[in-house]
Image 1 (tube, rainbow, N blue to C red):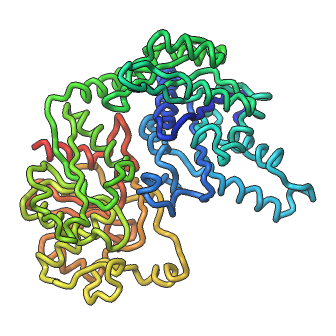
Image 2 (tube, one colour):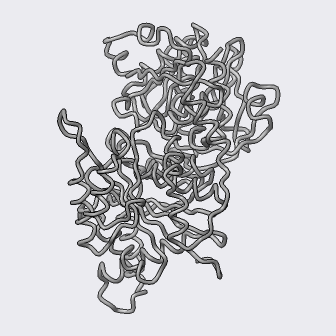
Image 3 (tube, rainbow, N blue to C red):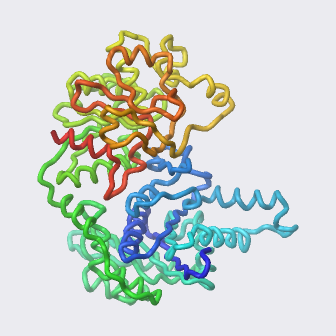
Length: 533
């Protein structure tokens, strides 16, 4: 808790169905409050029992976002960082597994002094302390997004903690619901929202605002009905219609006066806003002068949320260049199985991006895409696994190492261009974790990477185990591959590039995790510029 500074809490809950955009709502409101000069600290509550998101399949849960401190967290924290331009820590993400592990550890240490440890009051009290402890000395608002929907058994304890906290702290509740349209008549149906709010009331929470997701702007009659049946002022029923891009959401909320009414609820004075750059970017995205076609080649393409940070990094980079980005999703397992060729799937694209991943499935298809980009002189960006596979492709097809591979893909390969380093092998066999989080990357002068970053050092985030095998570095360099970034020891290569190519660059780290809405990672900016030609 900050010293004498007044701390206020805004709790965002969801109802009817999941996936309505609570994370975008929370991030947008945080951005609007920041534009008025207030300091924000967001928290994402995930009701699943996993301690963190690191072991979860992207196809089931979406992208695993990595924070600078090495935490593997829900993708909504990526939205928070992008919208607010801040770096978060593991304290900004709570899961059922994490809070129970925290309380059980205290119980094992005897810190409850023999008491019977229960969900109420011990879990809920610990949650309240967690909510408060996230605040920094200059924090004005803590935004708490509670995952799932009201009525889920998993999130009851988190809602109860917020209800209890509202008895002693200044708390505002926003409920995000769905207002569907049924049949050809086109009438907006309020019953799902009514029942969701009723469920929220049953556990003792009365929402102060309702954010209604709908295909179109709420009709006046709909707002009046929701106000009457849900006990919320009509002006606090906020319309959240479908938009072309998520960066329009803050201004939609602002146009309905939501920021002013939130500040009024807390008895705070209205300040002039500073959203000029944001409005400019959203305008460029809405009225692009050109389009760039970029292929994302991966094996999780059936759920686009698996690559959400990459998508938004590309969109913001294109927007700042007055363009829109058209993504072509290439399932690389189709190339492996012979259903299609890289040439047929990549025909007509302006750029090719190979994202991160794990395991052998789809790897050979990605290698085929990298070869196509190299030989056809198409701008190429490889991220993490893309760095490793680019090294393998170059070793095979330029250096003549026909058996080049990664020991992750083929543990018995005779030419392990990508391998666990000797210092890592014994640790990995014992279940050691990956290299995770932010590290300094030393960048060589006179290289493409040096030009992009405009300096000799950058802070980037990692999530991987395997490395470029130093034994093959000299062979690759003699044939023209340039390693332009490395760790502080100079032994571990972290950026590769190729001369005599419009743009061929790959990173062992994930630049999408440090990209922001108004400040995209410079690698993405330059990649998009080259794709635009």
